[in-house]
Length: 229
Image 1 (cartoon, rainbow, N blue to C red):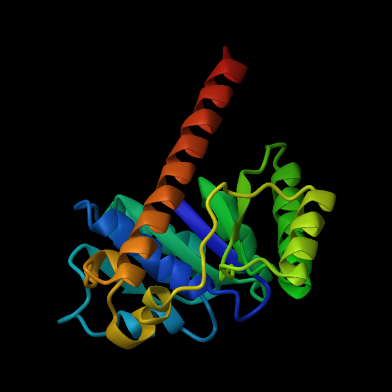
Image 2 (image 1 turned 45 degrees about the horizontal axis):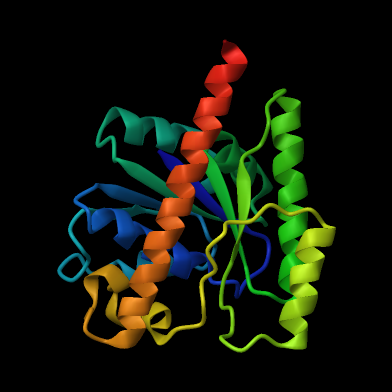
């Protein structure tokens, strides 16, 4: 399975979510490979120390222009259970390949006008890519860094999502220390101290995101089979 995480805007937490989702699947014994195409190489830096990196998680930083060949090589050699592609919207060619090869594309965005605006741009690009192949796109907005107390700005962002008809996952990722600590410890919440409330709540949210993803992919597969029949 391939999941692409894409954004044309920095600071939305794309790399954090990538690393955290890797932990969700790896904690269940799955092999997860992260393809880090972000120009800051953030997630690969966080997982650079093999001694503390959780078992089952590997990372590569290929040239964005060679993404097609890199994915083919992964499939032919290590064949991980899950591939997560962290790609910036500035790499248009790599973004196109990443979303075309993915079973699902997630567009992380905080509930702000700027993030929702950029998310809509990425959504339009994804739609155009799939239309070129005569296919229906499968992508979802993933609301991230949601504050526990709703503000007027968050309400406006929610209304914008509805107005722009951006499909989103049901689960929202809240602002929590456990997510930010990934960059310091190199440990996703599922591999951190579960006795800490912030970690336990993060794990609960991430498990809900996984459930959303699996339900969505199952439903999409069923619809595809019915379409063939």
